[in-house]
Image (tube, rainbow, N blue to C red):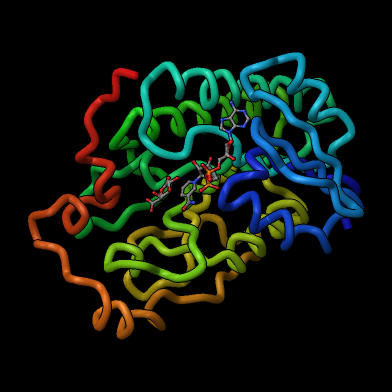
Length: 265
Ligand code: NAI
Ligand code: 15L
């Protein structure tokens, strides 16, 4: 059992899920966000903190032996918003980790680092980035900071390029990109407990028959996803209109993010 896991972005969609599901794995969860997190339950500490505030992030990380970094902008927005939460935020987090004993970090990267690959392509973690948004670019920055701090200081991280982490797949694209909550939790715990983590890219996907991404390089972590979006294929065929084959959502791995404008504010 870990002593204290820090979850940034704990008020968000995935933060709320992990707040419940990581509880059995740590004596204490330190939950942080810029927005309201409610009342701390037993075994929880709540710390409101803007990731762009370096001194606050330094204090936030002190005393934690593992970090799940979910906090930041999670969709396409203006560069100014992305810059402070995702660029400065990730730098602040890695600097704080360096000052406080190099706790392992799960960095919530994204499929939008490679979103402009087409859906007929199969990718390995060594394929070049093809971001589909400034948001995707910010996740590439985060992965680069993690790599720098690994090579310079030995900081270990899992760079989890999450597909679509939802209770169940909701559309045709998610038959390929779905990542179940249970598989995310088992990956987090595998990355925290593996004898060696290094700085490893892991595609955040369940064992989907229609998956696009090869995780064989990360087999040494001992993580085996259990869910498969295929189990929902029939239900999706019955309830979800099939997109036009030329629509972005049916063409590119990043789906509709490839259609987003550059936001000015
Ligand atoms: P979300 O948008 O629901 O949660 C993000 C949280 O970060 C929010 O509660 C927000 O208040 C907080 N936040 C934003 N700016 C902040 C700042 N400056 N300081 C402190 N906290 C700040 O996103 P979700 O869906 O829970 O995703 C979590 C992480 O996983 C995000 O980093 C996202 O980019 C990544 N991800 C999620 C995927 C998914 O399928 N949900 C897919 C790929 C990546
Ligand atoms: C992401 O990176 C987003 O944070 C999430 O909201 C979804 O859009 C997901 O990717 C996806 O591609 O389905």
